[in-house]
Length: 247
Image (cartoon, rainbow, N blue to C red):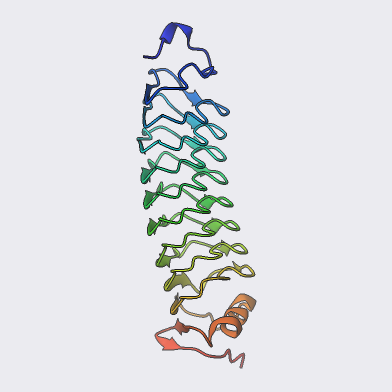
């Protein structure tokens, strides 16, 4: 269905009524808004030559049910799959180094996602409004979770933060109303304000690793214990803690 001879960098919105599109081999970029609001699009074939999925490339493709992202893609730009409301699962190959803000924001049917093992940052609002998301495994290379990354993921019941994560920004898990268990390293440098605001079913926060005797107790831990010890268990070194002793 795709006319290779007429293909230039913009797709030029040639097939707005298509239910399937084959992007030809040799294409390296799906650019700015190129396939956005293709309301009848259900499946897409992406070529092995692809490197970048651009800004809001598939925005509003509300019937897109599945997409295979080939090995070799390194960058997925802001809002690439935003409001793809029928998309149920997505797998990112290990070649993906960057995912930007709002990548799958508003994908209300998304149940699971496989993230690249090379990923070091999850951008703001990346998964916001993914109310069916119940499973996400964060890669060990991850270093930061930016603000509102998982806002409104109301089916997410547990999350384990890898030990290399240094920062969790404010409101990262805002209104994850089914979240019951969070596991995270005591080595965190920063745990922002209201990270767990609206997580009213939270039962357990498990902190793994050991406090260093040579370093002061992190301020974020004091705040966390003060805010949450009355509503859920905070476990450190196998024991429940209800207060911080600085001595």
